[in-house]
Length: 167
Image 1 (cartoon, one colour):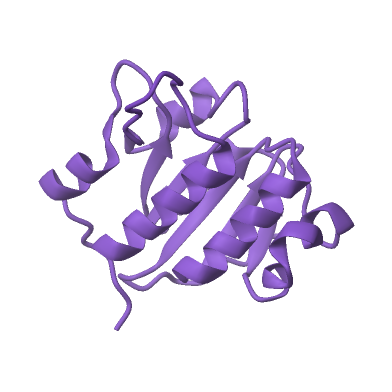
Image 2: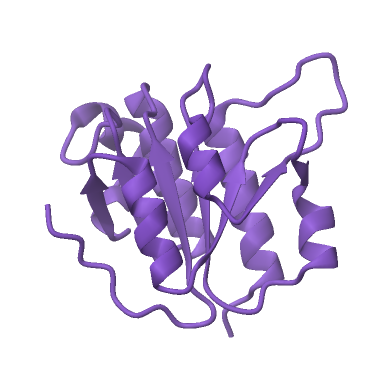
């Protein structure tokens, strides 16, 4: 598919979904994207995309309101976003990641921003993380070391929107 990303404005927030295996998670991400006012979802790899009943069950119509496009490779989507001036943040816990709130306090959003979420078990792939400008994580205060990907997506979307509000 030919990408249809337009020129971003400074308040633009988009997300890249890399190899999300659950259509329920994808539907939840559409719904959170709509609620947080994201401009677009870039769906990649084997992530399902509309129209699919499994997505509609949790999206509850949001898939009809949020712009999206399909990319076969998330790394190509991230590269295209970078060329368009997006600051790309990978959402992943690793040795070099910083807490998302801390990152946004020390380096505020000053233009369009994108974030990448990945596979429910394997996370964001190494090549995509390497292409990101920064890698951030959400704090985990309990015994588990990660959140459901759709929950993490929603928290990140709203955190980024709070730091880059629409009038």
